Image (cartoon, rainbow, N blue to C red; front, side):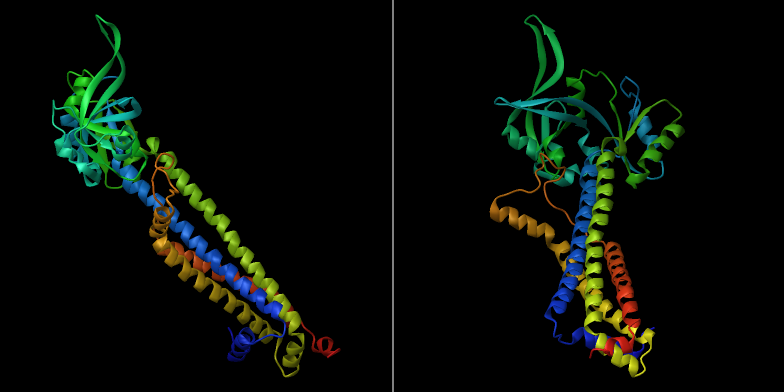
Amino acid sequence: MFTPFSLYVGLRYTAAKRNNNFISFISLVSMLGLMLGVAALIVVLSVMNGFDRELKQRILGMVPHGTLSDYGKPLDNWQVIAEQVSHQDGIVGSAPYIQAQGMLTNRGVVRGVLINGIEPELEAKISILEDHITAGSLEALQAKEYGIVLGALLARSLGVNIGDKVTLVLPEASISVAGVIPRLKRFTVVGLFEVGAELDASLAYIHMADAARIKRMDSGVDGLRLQFEDLFAAPAGIKQIVAELGGFYRTSDWTRTHGNLFQAIQLEKKMIGLLLFLIVFVAAFNIVSTLVMVVTDKKGDIAILRTLGATPGCIMRIFMVQGTVIGVMGTLLGSVLGIILALTVTDLIAWVEQAFGIQFLSADVYFISYLPSQLQLDDVFVIITVALGISFLATIYPAWRASRTQPAEALRYE
């Protein structure tokens, strides 16, 4: 525990002007290095948290948490299964779907697309689609009218808007008197959605009745989509549902379709955090070098204090105070800077993109088109605690060296 004398002298040493300006410069560099390391760590971890949040809310809000289907044939009794599933714990909602892969064309432009046949009135229970409609409406999808809702990027690449026509080409051939021709169907664009993710360029929705006609399904659906309260409970929950239903069903969940993306973000967060902590370690080594030079510069003062009765422990605490002050100041300034940047980095990057006409994250390459950020106080607390701990440990060796100074040796040439 620091005595008032050790604390007083340590603070005076920290604030005092030195004859050796190089030592003052190294002290400032140590503080700035620690500040930048802490700030960078807070900002980067907040951005990684933002990507994690957007994956959960946007990507996993558009794709089902789990699906239930039959083996190689349509699911005919989906209404009965949906009723049974609705009573299961942890289930938010369920909805049938018919899915097809194909190509959309307009004026010579061709784009691959995943077509989802849905019941518009049931979609709100399992998806955030309705909340991200930017033009038209989901209710405009009516049976036998062949309307289609496109992602904003997909519509932009095809050059279409509300009311325009697009042609769906299915990867199946039809035999007619003219020979083998691909299956084509014209659709009218009745809505556009935008979630700010890669799904905007590859996903489209039509009415389930229209999907059944283009796939020539007389009855049943491809499967049942399920939404869970806790998405992490989906893998175990879907298996439990199948066991309680007592049948043979094919199941899938989000960990199979997008789990690799989620795991990649988690791994990147850990590795980037570890690498950035090295910056804090480097700053801590700067504190060591600073204190070693201070001890060398203050050998005469240390010897005088020893002759006045200061114990080696008192000398050690004096220099630990000095190093700790550098660590505390650097950590606190870095925390304030990091928190400010973490709260404003999304708007800051958006302003830079708009001002200079550039785009850092393209939805054609990345799964979202902007830089998200989510500040978590737990991360800030851990960063501050570790930085302060490293800074404190960095003071021990130089302070111990100072406590070993012998007055007679130090004053021999004074």
